Length: 94
Image (cartoon, rainbow, N blue to C red; front, top):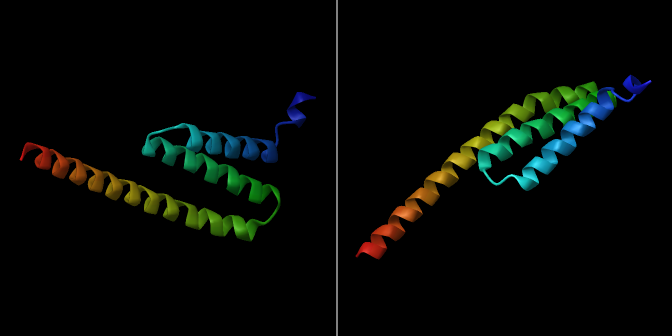
């Protein structure tokens, strides 16, 4: 009776909602990346539940690529912030 509610669509929707809420609530960029991966997993699950398997295959191929690009962007952003802090500290010392 209660197990009828647990299917691919509801689990995928729950993953998508958890990922979305985590991206909004969490402050650290790497925590946001983890939540983004949950969001992607739920999104692919919903596409599969709708039986668009060709679109799900394309999304499954492109999702890891976007995650790597997002991680590279976070690393570069942290480097720029670190350089700006160091230059400001040098400016305050002079």
